[in-house]
Length: 375
Picture 1: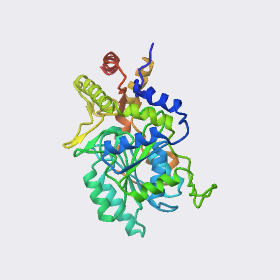
Picture 2 (picture 1 turned 180 degrees about the vertical axis):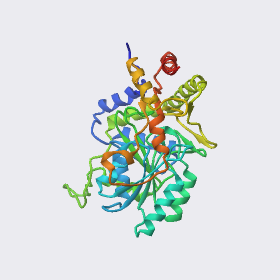
Picture 3 (picture 1 turned 45 degrees about the vertical axis):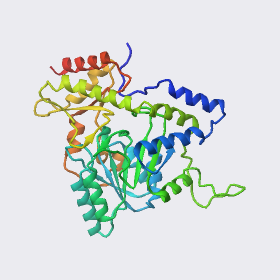
């Protein structure tokens, strides 16, 4: 039986054209025409000045922190309800993450708790050096409130849009709001370069710094000269070729993911106790993953995991929502500001198969299996 995957790569024909071009011209090593074109396409899509394509979204966050001058002992406010890669680079630098819980409307970082954490930190004698905001599952965070807080306390925002390429907040693309934006092109994202990411910014000094240190910090000299620590984080010309082809169909991929979301919602919303994350006014989500919540007043505790395991028996991949980072053993010593939202989401939520390559028949099979399990 063919397995129904959560979010597998969706590759077409244009990708091979650009990859073949790289082989024909022997542009296999990092950098090259595909990299230049891919970065230009991304900058035009997001309406930002410059983009640096990189080996991963995690590398992009690491470089963002370095570009902002984050150092050992600095405080960085991080969203708790997300993948650990958003916070790991803070640890790379021996800085200190402070985890902020989510608000209920978008499931993203809570602005009120964010400001509380800033005020408390200042009272203790140390202002946070940065805020990392995540647009979870493609749903934009409350950027108006967060940007206002950032300006009020003069704290830069790193905008993790790894899951939100093509999503919009007040008709502006996610990834273009913060001092630095982050993208990911991992194999499960809405478009992929097989592995890869990007850093975007309107600050030319940040971009210059990132381009330099992402390529091993090589100085201009007739020999290898290094005045600071560098990293091997650039994207290859071959992978960028995949990205060029993928970007050309981004609109179609988003449309299909939204169509899949609507199929799930139309059928499962009829069941009392199942709910979906809706878009607020001025918000457009790429619906990278469709997620559902089981009301714990109607369903028994652990229903989400029961459904996940039963779907797995039917060769259908689903996944529990993110386990909050403040619950992760690796971050056990980190300070957290909590309101219980992320705990509830983890205990009651489930991600459903959402890949744009899935057929209607596969989605309907998933829907029917869920109905049989819970009714």
